[in-house]
Length: 201
Image 1: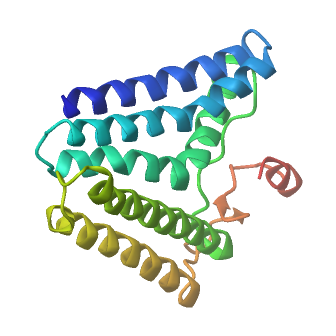
Image 2: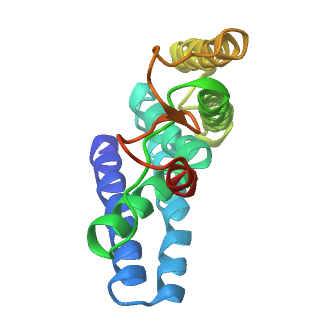
């Protein structure tokens, strides 16, 4: 059952996001779009609530329950950036918006990008571990902290690695190859004026 709930939540999340972007750019219903976007965290909260009910109903706690809890943590940490990414690409493909810029690759811009990723990862990990820990008292005895030990270890490792990577970029910023023209951390298009590249950034 929990596998079905996770699959349904994943599909629902993308459907709601697609509807929100469609109503915003194709139908010009901005208020409706905003309401739909606010519904994205609700999808993950419903999944978490159903996970708790599944455990309280007698299901044996396992890693799938922790995975279900991680969706809410992921939404808090990465949800806004993922929505922004989808918004830029939808606007470009269906509403005549500017072409989305890739992530910066060089210099201080790349360093800041890596720190943003690290912060999102740490936030996601902390929220996820908090929700997994809450499963123990909420499950009415069906779950124990030891059941999720592997998740504590793995998420901690992922968060620490991301922080180390960001720290390395702070100490040793990535420099572009010789002869490559860079604007705001990105390789400037051939023949593109510097002013235009700055505007696109």
